[in-house]
Structure formats: C-alpha cells, structure tokens
Length: 279
Ligand SMILES: [Zn+2]
Image 1 (cartoon, rainbow, N blue to C red):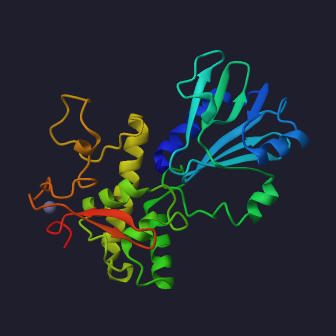
Image 2: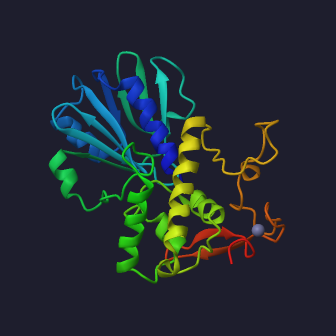
Image 3: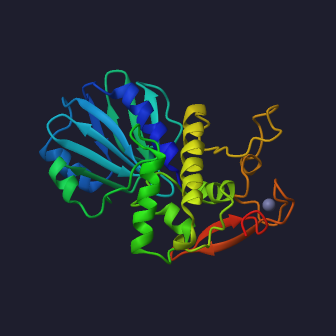
C-alpha cells in the first residue's frame, strides 16, 4: 500500500504539472465517474489544486468539482508528456486527465469519486483525517495532543494500531508504523495509556522526520529509515534500508537480537519489532 509520503509526492508532482492548467481531455473506465462526467463535463475546467490527505488524493477543478481517489493496495498514478508511451497496459487505466502538455493516468484505482465541497464535507467514506504529518501546518505538539486526545477515549488501543489510524494522524502506513515504534524504542503492542508524554513526543518526531526525509529525497517507493553503512550504493534491497520492517528472524541493527513479527489489530497487519530494544 502506498504510504502517505508517496501520495504526497504524487500530489506535489501533479500540482506542478497540471495545477493552474485547463483540462483538454478526460477519460475513465469507472462507470460512476463516467456518469458524472456526462452531466458535468471536465474539459475546459481548470485544475485549481492537487492535495493529499493521508492516503487520499484530491484534485480540485474549477466550478466546485473535486475528484477524490484512494490508491488502496495496487493503485498508482503516472504523469506522462502528451504522446509519451505509458509504462502500464491500457486495460489497467482507470482515469486519464489531459492538459495541453501532460497526461495524468491513474492505474488500478478502484476507489474514485466526484464530489462538491459540500458533499465532500458530508461524506462518511472519505474520512475526516487527523492532522497530516507532511502538511506545512503540522507540529509535533499538535501531533502529541491528537495522541493524548485519542488515549483518553481509547486507553487500551495498541500504539502501533493507533499510529496507523488515519483519523488520529494522517500519513503513516504499515512500514513506517513499525519503523517509528522501533526508532522511539516503544513496544508496538503497548496500550496507548502506558505511553509517556516523552515517548509520544519521540514517536511523533520520528514520524515527521522519516516522512519528510523520504519526501525530500524522492526515492520512489523505497522508504529509508536506516542508513547505516550503505552510502556507497543505492542498489540495496528495500529491506536493507529499514530497521525492522520485513526483517523477522534477522539481527537487530542496534543490539543483535532477533527481530520479531506478529499480526496485529483487527486488520491483522504485520508488525515488526525488536524484543530487546522495544521491551
Ligand atoms: Zn534491538
């Protein structure tokens, strides 16, 4: 699943390419979008802005029309110069937005809707997200207060499950969840009520630091949290760049203990941790 920083980078690239530009073509393989497009044509509208909210991508068109998509597990969004060959088959195309110079193509996206500002505000499917870790306005203090607020309502919630909850903090996915908990030395299965204010601060700081670093470096889907002695090559395996994610049974990079993995939460997402560094 694309993490929040991937969606953020996608939104930023889209904003630079098609922001402020007029739509010259639109095509979709999704019946629900096609129906709206029939009634309220997109061609001629201007792309006002592109925004990410956690793992949701929102494209605002002039005339109060918003295309809201979620990449889910397999979706991706490509940006091509007009006429450039696509790197994915036409059969996987779900949405194409054309401007004079660019084609933005969403592949394998199954969740996409048109909204007005009003319907978006009322939508129960598009969640009201917590503060976006990557937004300009995000502060560590603000993140801590969201965690504290959630802790009073759900004191027994496990911290790694909370870190994944986009209504608390928006942006972290399953990889960062484990990496951030490791960096903060916090056992991912601890109930949130046992997390000290200092630990909350460390968790939020690492969440912000890792996500910002990955956005700045623009390394595609290769999330980097561990960069010990690998400055020499970029050809490393994804798991070589991480502290614990997908490293069960291997030595902890800090203490040498065997990294563990267990399914966690109602969604049974894989959680990785070091039993010694995160007691
Ligand atoms: Zn360790």
